[in-house]
Image (cartoon, rainbow, N blue to C red; front, side, top):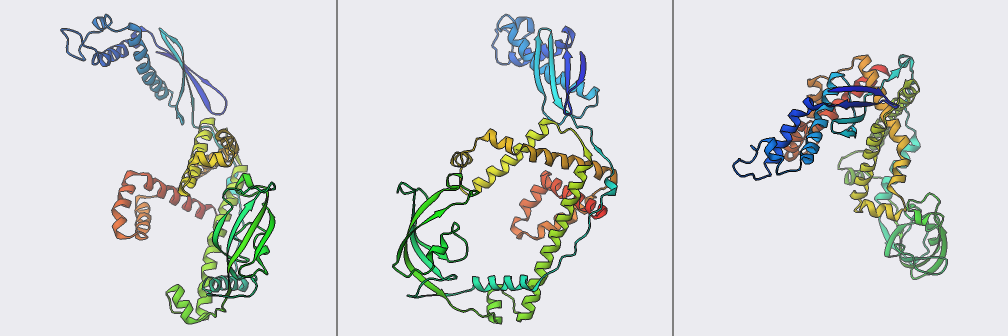
Length: 422
């Protein structure tokens, strides 16, 4: 076998491989053995028909074609191993000549990564604070969710609950699909409806009817409705006013399941806000570090890795859409998006993600960050404790399969790294 390796752009290489007759002999024999199992030849057992006999019953080109397929797989791997290359994608194979076999394999390899001066990255540590108004807002929301309502004949105001029938119509007066509902409950001011809708309900009483126009925002999640003007016809079926809700020990215990005085409840809320802010500040600091690290990273990201990352992003979208009970193709159709446009849209994001991983991998290796088996086992034990006992066996099986173990190892490695550099 003769081969030559040529470097291409973006960490890709081309391996040209030429196989002579002697190289092909074992592949021709193996191809003949496999094909002979499917051919009945009088006087020979299946799988034991000599090649020269088999050629009388099967087209020789068919044997050669199959032998070439076997040869391509083996000779490609042999060349990769001899050159000690690290392929990170499937090879694109182009057959130059079939007899004698000559083919090219184009494959992405682990790119050269330069990260210089990362040791000088300094990210200021922000100390989070909790304001009194933040605690007050949580308590206000707590009371709102505990509010009871009673029916009234008075006009609806902000904070009142109303039940309405409504339907949307376009500028030509045609009913628009998916814009109608019956006995729809709304708390005025909660922002559950498109902007401008709830404000038009203020001042209405039970039995009142009203027509009004609402313009949907330009960034509305459904493309068909962006900047669209719809006339809504509304009929009020019920108006309910909120009863004043006091923050009492009884209410706190009823909702939280814990007996606390008001001051203890406030302190508990403050503690939770602080924990959340501290975690967010930590994440923000890590993200700022990564952005600075990217500025110091030089790498040509192979297209194969970018395409693979786009696949992951699209798959996440599919899972998300599927979780909402919709087919992905239907989602694309409704939003008038083509899959190829979606892939173009996320290409830059995918390239950035890959670049981050490669940069982190490089500096983690330089810093000698290691995670021990004991570290992984301890973290797994902690994760397992969050699940009911009847699910432990399944989690243990997932752990043994390796994917969960890898996720834990990666998470712990990153944690150790950031603890060191930050």
